[in-house]
Length: 234
Image (cartoon, rainbow, N blue to C red):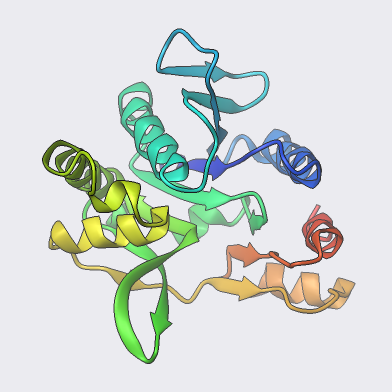
């Protein structure tokens, strides 16, 4: 199985995000044999559109950090760059800082059968009606589908430079819409575990040993609980 590429939406503010990055770096250093991992950040004092810092496991995109359209921009610009830089990669995952991906299990959950045409992620629903709203915490697409999505993004900017969805809606909503426009089959994954309580050692072992679970969402309005939950998986 070829190693997947994992891109992690990141920011240095608030300071607790630095703690989350430190935890991610420990996982990356421990499991680099299983995948490629990079943080995605923006900074506006760059000459080039994109830069990569292998020591810090970080890809920088020129611009200012913001929710809309910043997260979508750095995702798509980095995606275009990575598709060229890592031609051997067949699957790319976009996630965020407050997630845990079990890097030693991810290759077991992906197979050579998903090398092309694979669109596996979680859906959110609104008022019991399906909408193209993919959870931005875990978007797992084969490279060819990311290429189709990237084309839709570029078309949106070209045809709607001032009022396209790219500059109005959150990144995960936009990506869901672009996937819909690309007319691809989207699979609803069930490999996510939401942390909504204080984890025990038994909880962690059960999660690690349960087939199919490779993504744990640790987001909490209490950031210290998020960090504690993430630390449980080290």
